[in-house]
Image (cartoon, rainbow, N blue to C red; front, side, top):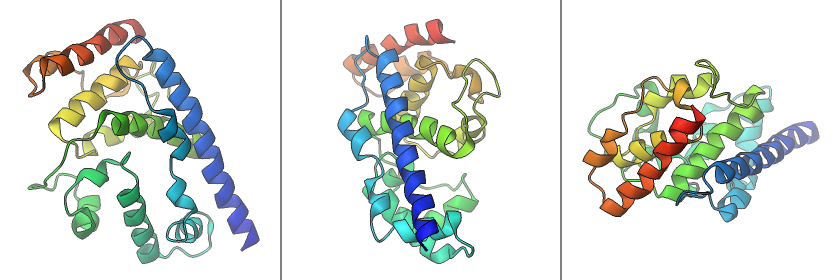
Length: 213
């Protein structure tokens, strides 16, 4: 039990350290744009994993000898509810369809809400940090296969159309255009149902895309 506690506690701490590193890098690259990931968010990231509802089910699932699928699933739903950097947080009635959605990422008739910019940027930081924490390397945007998780998972993310535009624009601006399954068309911003002010802010990222890819 003590070994299990130490192993999972360290996994959380290391991931949170990687989150800070990823956030610092994001903010450095985006410093001349209108976007920054909140340092408060970075510091508070995944604190719910220390809660009774999540800590032991996660520890047992990832480091224990027996995996209790139902306990882990309840812990996952708790985590999604309290952490809006997960896209699942914005799917209406997610708890009731989560198992179906995990087996069928093309499930139709979903009500998906738009993510705030802060949450999207934290999601980007989380994906970067998770790759370093759990797969052992920082994503490399200079290689087509430099971020296999994102290449394989990008189309499975069920995002509001505006959220997908922003998420993709952020990834491109940060230098990860090559790892995406399809090339991003920046003209989609002009046709998006957002304010002119939002369009101007997003198009600032296009210059970084050209510079970093």
